[in-house]
Structures are given as C-alpha cells and as structure tokens.
Image (cartoon, one colour):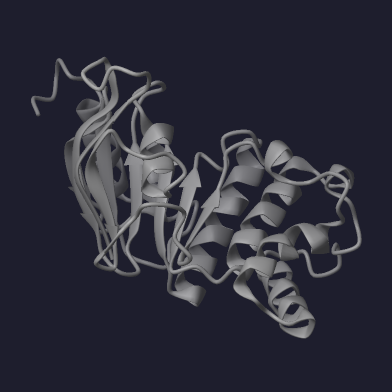
Length: 255
C-alpha cells in the first residue's frame, strides 16, 4: 500500500544540512496497523508531513499504491495531534466533518449521509449541531477522526492524536480506533511516543532514531480483538513492552 524509500528531509536552503529525516526506508501493507514509536524530536511529525504530501522531501520517494506522492493524495487522510487547532470553531460539528467533502464532488445528500455515518461511527450521532468549543477534548478528537472517516480514505495518518487527553479518555479512543480500523478495513499509520499504546494498537511497531530512520521493526502478534485489561496482562504484552523500551535506548539495543 505504502512504500518509503531513502526519504530525507532537510529544512533550510542547504540540502546537505542537518536532516530531520535521514535515509528512511519502510513499507506498509494494505489494511495493516503500523505504529511509529520514537522519542520527542526524532522527526516523527516531519516524516508524516512528507508521507502525506504536505511537505516535499529533500530526497527519496514516497509511493502510494504504485504512484509517487507529490502532493496530498486523494486516498489519504490526516488526523493531527492538536484537535483544538484542526477544527474550525465557527462551524458546527456537522459542517466541520463535511468540510473536506466538497473536494470529492459529492452531492449535498451524499455528503450528509457520509457525515452522519462518520459521526455515528465515533459515537457523536446527536452532536452535529454543537460547536467544537461546546465539547470536551475527547469529543473534539472524535470529531477530527469523524472528519477523516467521512472522507473515506484508504490510508489514515495519525500524529499522536490522543496525547492531549486524560488516561481514561485515551483508552476509550484507542478502542474506538481499533473498532473503526476493523470496520472500515483501512490502513493506519499511527505516530506515538507511548510504548503501551503502540503495543496495544499495532500489528507492527517501527522504532525511529534521530534523525528519523528505522532502528527496529517489531511484529506484534497479540490476539485480536484486544481488551484494555486482559491484553495488557498477557506475558507477551510485557515482553513486547520491554523489547520496545530497550530499542529506544541506543546504548542497550544495537541497531
């Protein structure tokens, strides 16, 4: 589905300057759930911006379904970390969710149906006439996810989308995301710096080192469906958590 080949990104006029992303190589399969794990400042967000076509890489290539990514692809949606800035406060929830659908050429009825379906999928069927500022943080992030779903993407990019909510809300959003991923059969690339979150969600975890390059790829074979209590008590969950923790430490985990 997605192939990243020798991706390099340097900010500034000098292409040989200090890179934010350096020699990044990996692939993502159709309908796979891949988590990207790395410490703050290692280039995770820059990588996502290059994958989504929002930033042009200095070198290398991103390919989506055999087509080079030179701008934001039609088949891809992006959920940002800061939901409060990604939603338009003067628009009601329903209009926020429907906003990108104008670029798909849908009729008014088709857009309404897609919006209603997406809001129902995230548990906000009765909130369409509210404004974002009338909702809690967790509900606002659900609106951001609904907006991405209404667009019906094949690939969903998510940049630490649950980092700003409390632990209980975060657990609920994780389970919501897994349900959506399985129901809509989409490919998810999810950036996080939370090891437990990565193990709980993913089929595979890529550990990045700075500047962004893959240090380790770890398969997650935990059974699905997953449960916040039962899954996290499994011995394999603890083993994977320890392996990823070690992989984040360059001194204890050789590349």
